[in-house]
Image 1 (cartoon, rainbow, N blue to C red):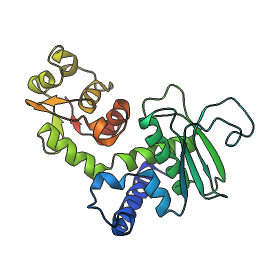
Image 2 (image 1 turned 45 degrees about the vertical axis):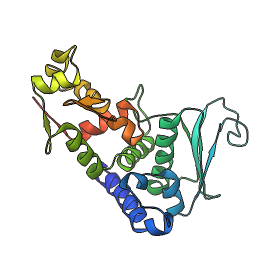
Image 3 (image 1 turned 90 degrees about the horizontal axis):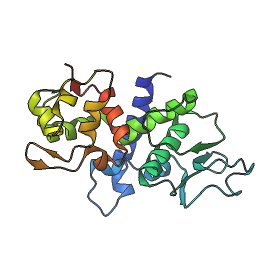
Image 4 (image 1 turned 135 degrees about the vertical axis):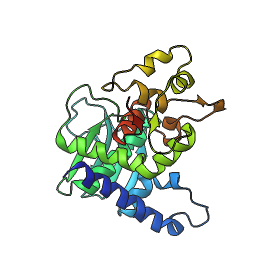
Length: 230
């Protein structure tokens, strides 16, 4: 199961939601951003989706391990549950992560996940978790939609080529930090992910638009090669 397979699986599910949009939202004009709903994805897949303040009690954590659970999937009960206690961004990413397990890992009967917002990893995660993370990123930040928003916000077509002017727009106080950033760093991508003012326009940052953390958006921008180096 490679990254292209996972991205296609997320895209296929988004397309299924789009095809069913008149049934899912019978009295609303649907916008592309609405398709990225883990709750709607669960409905399309035939699962119940529940949101609770916490999943830490014995109802969800039978072995009482002390681990704070952010989300779970129970195939026998056709149920996904997500906790709200970790904040909106973690809740959204966790929900999409559980959908990833549902779509990609058919042999998983019961699975519990800790809180994670899609940002840089402090320690390696098991393969199945990385695959579900990848699915969540592709589902919440679809390539076509993100490219469109990125190009509109930063007045470019395709890749954004950095210059001293671009660096100044993103960080007027320290433009050289971005202009001479290492390609291995995420500094340019982070600046773009959290940018709220560019070319004399006030903006809603990409991270805010898509409801994800700055670091998760920066990683996705880098994956899609939206910044041209040097």
